[in-house]
Length: 103
Image (cartoon, rainbow, N blue to C red; front, side, top):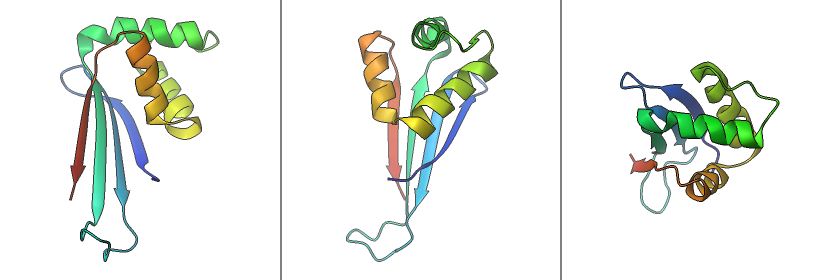
């Protein structure tokens, strides 16, 4: 799937990755036009996320939220996959939530 990714920090301070894909053909098997996916890491887990990013990407200065957002966007949304990011979070025991919606 070819999602349009957005990595940001929401009003509550949670780290959020959202992706949306609009289907080119609306006459698919289920009549779907769009799918949305989101991964959320709660604000109190950001220190663990920062440590994980610094461990695997030592050349990235992950001291600010913007730098962490850019690192995740570049490394996982553009170069790798969200599944691999989830695998890393699972191995580091950093809890997250996944939301999936089809419209």
